[in-house]
Length: 79
Image (cartoon, rainbow, N blue to C red; front, side):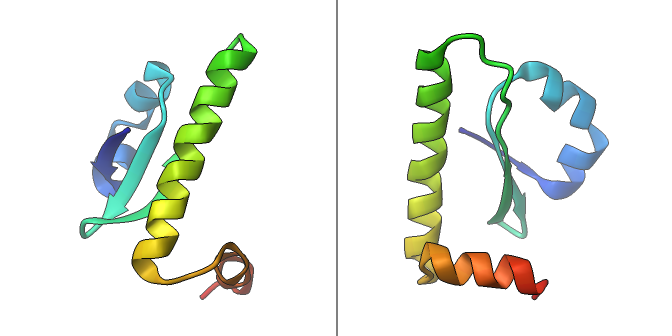
C-alpha cells in the first residue's frame, strides 16, 4: 500500500483519487488514516482491498497498543 504525507495527499488529492488504489495517509511518519476506493467492479478486488486494509489496521493497532474498540472510542470522542 502506498504511503503519503497528509500535506501531499491534500495537495494532490485529485491525482491520488484517480489512481483508484488504497493509500495510507501519514503525519510525521505515523498513519493517521486510509483512503480505500470502493469503485472496484468485481467482488474479488473488493475482498482483496478489504483484506489489505484489515491487515494494515491490525498492524497499526498492534504497534500503538490499542484494540479496535479503544480506537473506535477515541475516534468517536474526538481526542
